[in-house]
Length: 293
Image: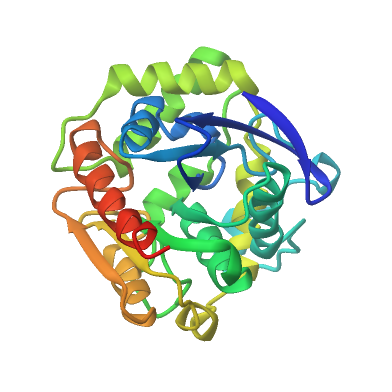
């Protein structure tokens, strides 16, 4: 792993694969460090001909934190309370492009998961000349008229997080059980290892709330999303309780020519059993674009 200065902040990143391969930038979701793009999944993408780049978004992991901004009350904000974001999804999109600048990459395939998918969409319409293709995984458009996160899931995600390491691990395992893919085995051992690594690497739950505030402030960018011209693949689970599948369907409907892959039984996670299917779909998508260059 390494760190660069980009868009005025420090960004921690890691690469997999040959530096001469077609680059793909992976943007993770709210509060999640780069390690949530599992190394095994990254290696699968690298084996399919990519230079894979995963990184810590601002306010998580080893990238710059925005401690001075305070912590917004997300439960109040989700119920209509005022919230002033410390930064925007546009800022996060500019971070991603700034990382590409720092790495000397002119254009890349852009892939985002969950909130990271919304950031990836923002990159695609804000910096279209930098985007070879877009892949949006278990994400949404911000449309308030679509089915929303269930209140009990929202409460679980944003309830206070314990400081104690073991209590934190139990808290996270409980939370993940509620959003895990019903059609696949719950991978408790892998999850416990990942959560423990995340805690030891950088325990910083405040970043999730500030990123959530940026999503609320972003709103529904229907026209901007519809202006995306990059070849687009949308992947979503049909049993996602956090960002319901309707968000993925609308993303694909708004972007001309977008392809939609619905994975039966998948929730708001990427089980190991679906890595080959997702990696294969992404590789087919990106290779079709690379073949035209």
